[in-house]
Image (cartoon, rainbow, N blue to C red):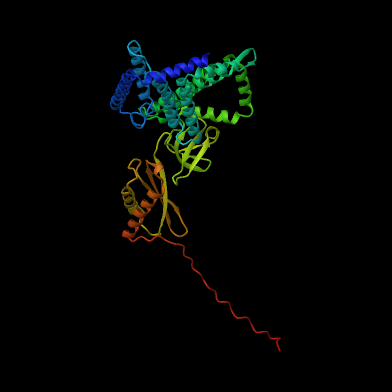
Amino acid sequence: MNATYDLHEFQDLLRNLGTQSALTEAAVLLGCLGVSWLLCAALRRVLHIQGAVLFGRSVVDGVLFPVFALVLALIARQLLASAVTVAVFKLAIPILVSLVLIRLTVRVLSAAFPNSHWMRVIERTVSWIAWIAVVLWVTGVMPAVLEQLDGVRWKVGGAQISLRNLIEGTLTAGVVMVLALWLSAAVERKIIRGTGDDLSMRKMAANVVRAVLLFVGLLFAMSAVGIDLTALSVLGGAVGVGLGFGLQKIAANYVSGFVILAERSLRIGDMVKVDNFEGRITDIRTRYTVIRALNGREAIVPNEMLITQRVENSSLADPRVLITSVVSVAYGTDIRALQPKLIDAIKTVQRVIADPAPGVQLSAFGADGIELTLQYWIRDPENGQGAVKSEVNFAVLAVLDAEGIEIPFPQRVVHTREVPAAAPNKNAG
């Protein structure tokens, strides 16, 4: 009976699509699409948003365009219902609903996981499910399918669960998680791009907001599927036991990450040395920290190591770094007269700062010459020390050449002794 009625309803829909009133509906629908495009284009120009989830790469491939079109189509359908037999809008509204769901899922997942192969599979799966649902709804088969799915039931504990409830709950959970992921990504991006010099604190705030929103979204999703949230107390105890044994290292890294961000002992941009690896901190995650060396290598350091081991931070309180070089001059050189000339030469190097001022110290009396220690400061250790050290050495060498001062090298004097000839043996012969 229901299947026959649905088939008759679908036949009536096809018949109404060929009437004159269908042309009027089509014209009104095109007007709704045009107004939606104009609204999206105007908002995009006002908000100056490019490549976002709402607007996409162009105006029509974002989420906002089908949303506006759906709202306008619903309004137009209500206004036309008393004047004409609705047919076109009966077909267009399910398509627009499906398009909204597809665009939302695809755009959010593409923005959150741009290089993930599994996200592409999920996007195609969502698209197929949405369009199949549209076909079933338009043809009138959907009520019969839902009735059959509702008939497949099984008992879980003290509750009866049908296949229809499971599918509807899973789809609802998926939509809730996508919305939570979208909102958390938007809030995180807003916090990271905010004003202020302390990027580490903004990073910590973004991580906390993302974790809270995803946790709340997970709770709503579990409730939508039909999971009793009171059972989470038992699950929490099991998770606590797991963290106490098998997951203690992972938990320690996560806790250490929040401690580092809260204490600000390490910040993004600091030059640090950890376990004989020296470089600049480029990112602080909740589980690990990324350190990039000056030669391009990157080290992923667990946050627990940064808490429990000694870490040398060259720019915690002051970014200035002292560099030393050693040069030897021959004995007999007037060191007092040479000192100011070497200091002036060091000051000419671009990256050497004036405060603290460079210095030249007589550090040792070597076996081959007098050792002078050159001390100078730089403010940008993240750019490396080799280049500035080379420039200082070139400047010092130019001064020594101009003054005719010799850089001594090891010399050895060999003395030869003449051994007297042995006395003749009188007993010989």
